[in-house]
Length: 96
Image 1: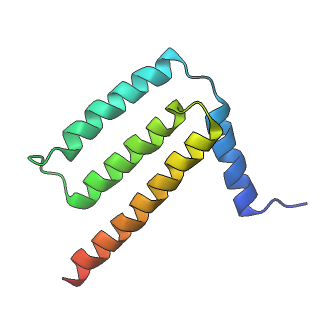
Image 2 (image 1 turned 180 degrees about the vertical axis):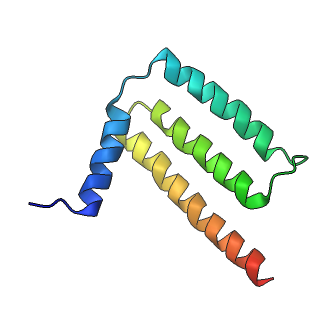
């Protein structure tokens, strides 16, 4: 039986969260934070869309730091809301 797209997506996210938090992951989080801070700094020369995408990547990377599955899903839900707001921001910028 073929699995639906949503069940495969759910399994992918569960596999991401089932991995242990190793020292390599903590190092990656620190690198994400530094790179995200540099890219999002207002004096940078990066386009706004790139800044939003960089911070989205940082936030998704930080989602694994939550211990409870409910906290992780709440964080990803918050990120979904930010993605919708980003889409509105880009649409308004394109129409203006």
